[in-house]
Image 1: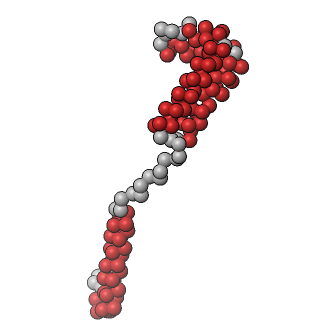
Image 2: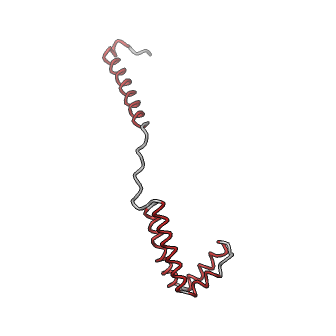
Length: 122
């Protein structure tokens, strides 16, 4: 079966060609728009520089030192961990903190500035 091309006429042919041309231009235009480089990342939150992190760590370290000097039993416990691997330390520290919830709470409060910094500056 053949289609009578004369019935389709010139208008139909022009419409079909126009649709293909404009459709292709739309696709190419969309591809070109998608090929643009991504926007630069947003700036880091304030007070998140390496110098800020060093200051926070120094403050936490000083607070831990002061805490251990003023709490000899806690200092003595941590002294017993010297020479152990992290894998050996973990269960002992967990057990000590479970048995001494006040020490855990005080140590967590001392570490809070470091935790807050890391949460804020991800």
